[in-house]
Amino acid sequence: MSFDEGRYREIYEDVSGTQVMGTGTGDTTLVTVKANHTIYVQRYSIQATTGSAAKTWSLEDSAGTPISISGSLDMATAPANYEKFYGAEGVALTEAKNLVLNVSAAGAAGIVTWTGYQKLTVVTSA
Image 1 (cartoon, rainbow, N blue to C red):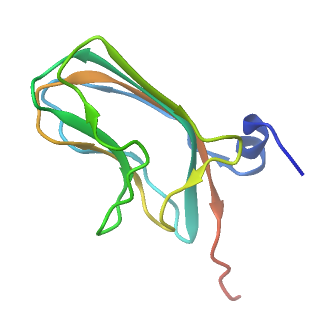
Image 2 (cartoon, rainbow, N blue to C red; image 1 turned 90 degrees about the horizontal axis):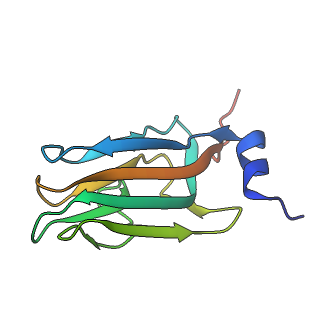
């Protein structure tokens, strides 16, 4: 069965959002996952509005060894735009881990937008 990306967010909990990042902002948790759930990111857009030399941003999970879904994005030049679509189902983060924007150092500014959902992935006993 194939769904469009909006259908997944109707069936499961929509965790989409937008975060404006100022030049003094550091690492930021974008979505806090519920216990026993997994976050799926369907798409993201990162727009650099103020560049800063040798600065990078990365969308990743909060695992001890994080999984990056964006790779290291160069924030030296603005305006710049990074976008990725992972399909209707999206890409799963590590189970029970938050969606985080990792900022290498303060200095750059921009807007982060993402669409996604979280769903129960661990069945607990009654």
